[in-house]
Length: 291
Image (cartoon, rainbow, N blue to C red; front, top):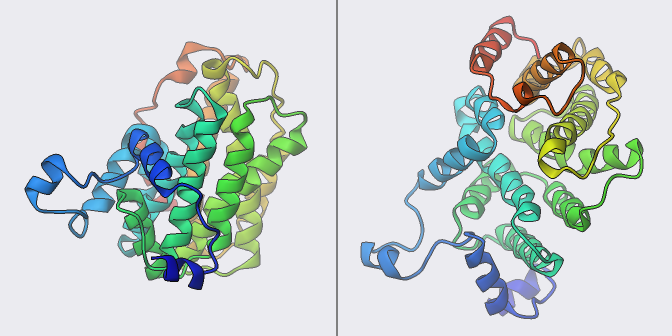
């Protein structure tokens, strides 16, 4: 293990046992003993990781779950893995009381990514699914590291000083996730990248608005509507193969429309409810072949 670590140029981890313990407390690792050992397995059977990721998305990122279902069949399980990875990182901030614990969990995922690219993923369902996605689609490591780095910076739980700071955060998290999705779909196109950048920023801003009632720490956030419009301006140049990566705009549109109906009162109870018609809206958009 040490030789493999050195060969991959990884930084040594000061306390692997402690790191593993933190991961286990956060529900991160597949157990090695107890019922799992009695059942005779240490890793999930093929396909089990995808099911785990899909269920995690269904509970924690329902819109991302629906959008992933609309991707080509050969990319669906990888999309579940990407978004489940994002969920795992996103929920760290809300599940800790001390920043140190958050940093340790981020370090777990940083090491997990390093191990994935060394063909030695940890015994954790999302990590194993991510390893399969990386192997299958040759995904770029730098985007995973950017997401972890930015999420780690955000553990301070302070309000964004300005809209540019929020855009930077969204670019390095949501847009980076879209860049990985485009790679997964086999899309290498500058116009698709531009669209992903703007859509990711818009998604980050809308997510910040939606989270305001829950966190009660960001009383004033201004939504730059020009970002949403600029993302759509690329649609005529973006290759159709990239469209499935951007179906999340349907959910963003739905939230913004409902927000306008309540006079932009982001604390209105109706905005906290799940729209049961969203699957239909997504289907219509796929039928029209637009995003």
